[in-house]
Image 1: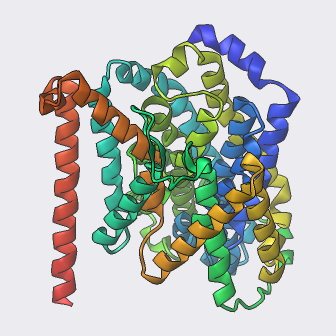
Image 2: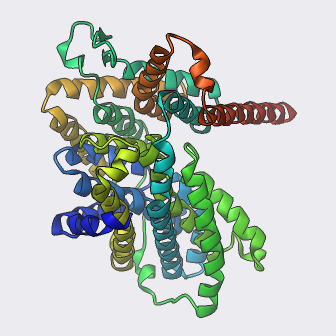
Length: 498
């Protein structure tokens, strides 16, 4: 580790990296502050621009968007009682009531401080835990990697919404799309229908622009959104967090950061789960339970530190095993691989300086998020009330420009329109689109390792129980599936009781 720190700092400390870092933080804060514009949408829109960058500035830009998105959602949650991101709904419980009491600036500052604390805590966890996990990953063979991917696919249950069946169908569609192109072992073309443009498969960024970005625009076009009347003058009123309030925020922020890191490491859980769980724990530990839901700073600290503590933790399984912790980091995987960085121990040995530069850079991302939040809160608040008729055409332009810029091909523009149509139909059928993302990301890796493992044993499945790691992953898979079945059975009984 120590031998990489010096070279990593040399690569990190240049003007280009810090410029893209700050730009990413600003864009992420703006997108997350506007209700309806998610962080994953923002990352998808700007992912094609990173294809022309080297690994470090590209990742700094995307991580800036990702981390700032965790904080930005709290702005609208506090000001207008509408969370900019799903996980900011927890912050809304106490943030808006505190704002109604005339302490808007206090609520925004508390959210910023807690977000920064959780983000830095998570970045340090990534820095010290990821290399250790990578050492374990180096001992895994093709059979173990297949089981890791299979375990990753159990995430479908957590992102399928109310219907597990619809989630499985959605993920299967993603796995099918991942098969388009050349066979990874034989080189024969599959599902190309004679079109040479499909021989190399479909670009992840292109598919996601259609699946998530354009379909958002179609959704907004179907409904009428009234203008938001927001008075930003109340933000300028001087109202400081007292010493006693600051002391009360420390424990829930610390405990919630630990919870956020633990939940973030587990693929498929996400910031929303971390926020709600941490809020519940903070309320249980607090001596002032009556304040929760009525403007508690402890509640804000718990929610915001937890959802930002997830950010660095989700990168641990991504960088070490290639398993994305959530949808946002799944998209970042393509930014790594476009620069020839394949997850695993090799990243920390042959290209350790780049990996450590990215991990240390995450600390600075959170520091710049704090500085921008400290001095640009008024601007973020005003952006909340930007009319949709102005935002919509701008986003559409970014969608088509981003799709064309990846390969400079009009064929890719047609592809995003096709995927937008698919996503729109799925939305009408109440089918989740995030499982498609999971299938697209894990499909090729799952298939390749499964077939390689069987080739090594002439088709014998005994290889999947040939090591303690295999057995451990099988136990995890069985445990995860059992929990899914039990939870679905409980939900079914509750539904019958109602």
